[in-house]
Amino acid sequence: MIVDSHYQWAGICSFAAAAGLELDPRLVVTLSDPFSSYEAGFECTKELLAFKLPFTALVAFDDMTAFGAIRALISAGLRVPLDCSVIGFDDIPAAAFYNPALTSVREHMESLASMGAEILMDAIRAHRKNATVSPVHRKVKPELIVRESTAAPGVSQAFRID
Image (spheres, one colour):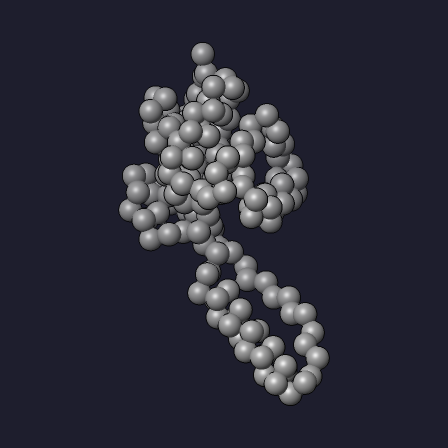
């Protein structure tokens, strides 16, 4: 996790609780860089594997971090998704072409940017008229784009960490 991933993490925890899933806090690794990267995903996943605790899925902060995680899993002799599923966030164009194609959460950035610009323009117009501006809160529902990097748990034998 990194600083601005707070809402993603809260959503993941909320979903896990509602689905009756337990998240092992020993398997949560925080990115040390303020920015995510392929290298950070690779290093954090190596750190997870060093704990020698089995896990069936890995959720990365974003797609670039997920790409690094996949590389680390494969380098450790694991198969994605048969031994471990990997999910990213953002659904960047490269996600569809990575090997395996990455399952990702699409956040509809264009819609968010358009809404932000509209809210800003409304605030500017209100300011010019000396009108008060009320806080605005809007939500955009993310979309799970399922590709080849995920499989149901138990599709293959769970990997062993020796």
